[in-house]
Image 1 (cartoon, rainbow, N blue to C red):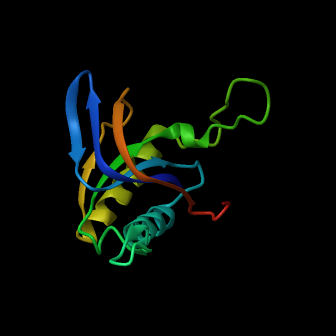
Image 2 (image 1 turned 45 degrees about the horizontal axis):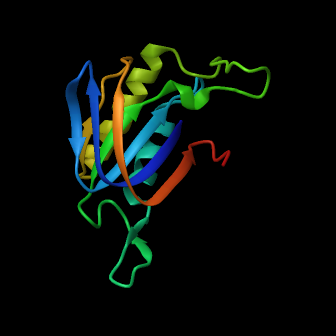
Length: 149
């Protein structure tokens, strides 16, 4: 699984002009699932997300996690994180998981974040969404459960 994690002042997602999720200070996370991913990947990625120390402490150092600052999470499914653009001009998505697997692991990721005690909002799986992000920093990081980067 892959995630693009952005530290935000706020985040919001709408589907057909209807708000589906909204957060204040915390993280907006775009989550992609690979064809070979398992429950282990979802748990690893959620644990890493919850405990990643990217919020400032009293000295202005990135030393606190989303848990430490009582931040919220807006988790958005995004299969395009597995788009392969190395050949040609159009990405292929052969490594993106089929919808049934992706949905199950996306839900497992979200549920694991909630088990950590985080408030989690979501978009709507498989729908066209508009995501509004007020990036704080900006701080944007990439995570991969296979540790490819």
